Length: 290
Image (cartoon, rainbow, N blue to C red; front, side, top):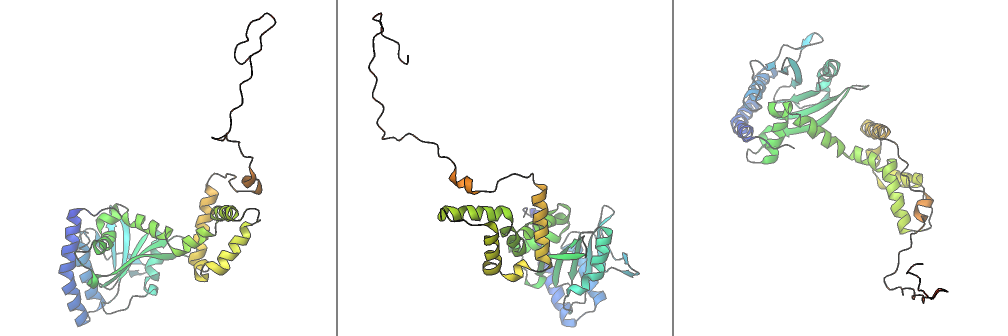
């Protein structure tokens, strides 16, 4: 992740200290959703750096109702925020309406919060519409002196959103997910490398890619890594990337391992004995190499 500017890091640290007591008090009073929205609006301003008068709005209609909050930068909605009462447990069904609207309007980011717990989602514009959990944190558990905690807040901050830090973080998490790694292991390029190394260890043994794929899928990798919507999405993305890459015949075949060896002169080999020079008929000595 990109380093946090000192000015932003200071604001985030001060914001943690300022709002933790506010949230504790609100939770003890079990304030309702409307009051929680007010607190979240103040946090978006003082902690995350958005101008609550010009960049935070609650007037975004979603199918006849209004989204709790939205972040608007340069006349464009960049983030929808679904708020629940501070004592409510966050559940993904709470996101459905906001995610559907975001996908239809091309809005990539949706957050779900009750003021204390925060979850950030990346909307997937597919069929069906979905969302990937990118980051989550408990605001009351944050340490203003911990770099990792400040980085979590920075993802949602105005600076992180406008500098595509959140997008870069999402791409990295996606690439390092167990579903993506599982799909990558079973991809043909990786299986080709595994087969080559197995053949190197066991010369003369015929090993096929499909045999390796079956053993990895059945006996090595966990089933939940290879099955389900997220696993299917990972397989599709890897397959798409491989199709986009210029095709090259890099598969190692039997002949690859039995390539003709180029003879290398031995350092200890005895050099050939010099041939005696024979005089020509006229008595002269021929030049070397003649």
